[in-house]
Image (cartoon, rainbow, N blue to C red; front, side, top):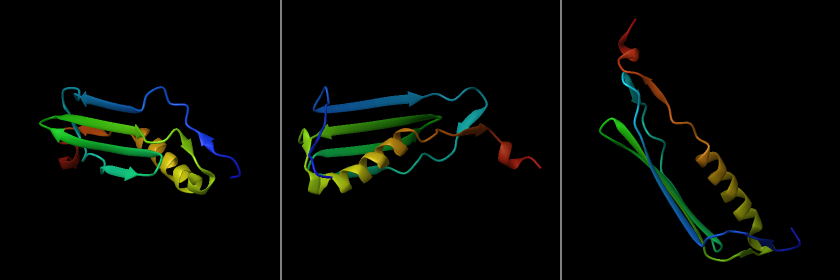
Length: 102
């Protein structure tokens, strides 16, 4: 990459937290692994935890610099792809007791 990449972010940080309540008779499979990284331009963290029958998801993005320099771009691109795949990861539920039937 020859030119810097400008991050056109509306905010310098964003945190989202949601709680998903499963339908009656369903339970969550284990939550996805947490992920955290910090680059010169951006920090990202995403975690999931089971609280009782519910699943809590928390995601945080912090923009440190609004410009990604060409030398930093390969690491940024890999991190951005990781963020997208983590954000699009499915939340999987199964019928309660489904694994015990034969």
